[in-house]
Length: 458
Image 1 (tube, rainbow, N blue to C red):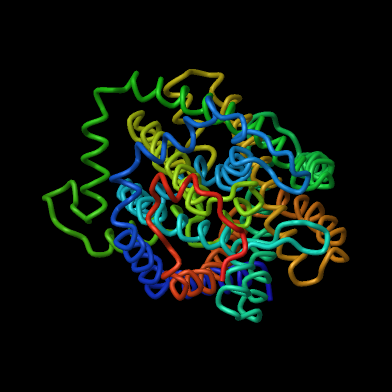
Image 2 (tube, rainbow, N blue to C red):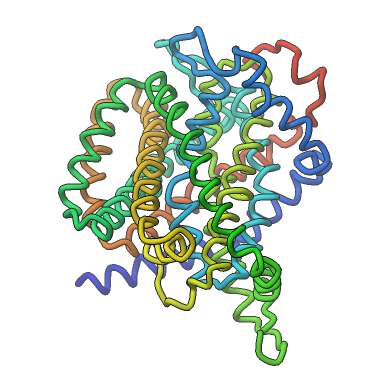
């Protein structure tokens, strides 16, 4: 079997996994939880903001943890954002527009809106059923609620296996490939050299465990996010005259309305929906359960409060960062360049900021993707610990570090396709689990948020 046949086989499997059945399951799950919490992510956004992002300026307990095996609520958010705010926010958006058209952005928004309710449910359940193992380390997320909530250890093991594979795909190969592609394009550095250097740096960090990961992401992610948002806002404001036309294009193409003659194309709609939802899930990971693995390591005692932190996570990740990337690309008219991926993003920022934009984007991708590598390593590590115990951790870390080099030197199309497949495999047991345990999901209020609660619920 040659390389082309292998790629076609992988692509066919991806089309099966992300067929109409998966899209229907994700949308219906998101709609169900949105109705169950009565559009809480929309109607109570002020309460969410007050008890998450704004709380870090008035409550030191949200930014530091005295438990050596736990991280603070803000560190949990930063680590979860580190796992999501990688190439999905930059290259993933460019890929979505290139393949699915501007309309894919609308479906990314819809994915995020429903995803806020889904990720809230994941994190509430992940915190309710989490427990500490013999080493006093948290076991949470889908591993806990599938095992102890549903009483289906075999399903938790299935999820853990898929999570390990996803940590090598989306959490590793896709990120390493994006870093090496950007470094090669901008600085002409060999992908092999980039892969080796990144592997060494990641190895140094992940050996230190969740506390070191939390400390690194707490420093990296806020600064990176602010710089990227500011640069994007500047470009969009420079091209403010194109903003109305850009939003019109997004909505028209989302529903298949052709610019020529106003006709409606079913094929355009199907492509926009499929690509938009897939890239949306890739970006914010709502429905995969990975966020709950990271948030369950927090020292919080309120499952509902931790769920609110995850809602804010999706808002920043997709509604803010992905939207700004899309607006930069579309308002600058960069799609006419027929470029894709990182080259399209670099072109868009060059059109807005000038010749040094390629360095800015390359460094942004490098640091975002690096943070994603670090964050996802913990997801895989948690799954290894659940199945094999501590004995398997050192071997997992060695393999994870080695796969970085493979990802850095692979074709980007294969890396992204493999990532999509493993995303889908993770989502199935996780969505089944949260739907069956949906009676445990409560709408947050001030009493629930601040009431100390036992972490072991039945």
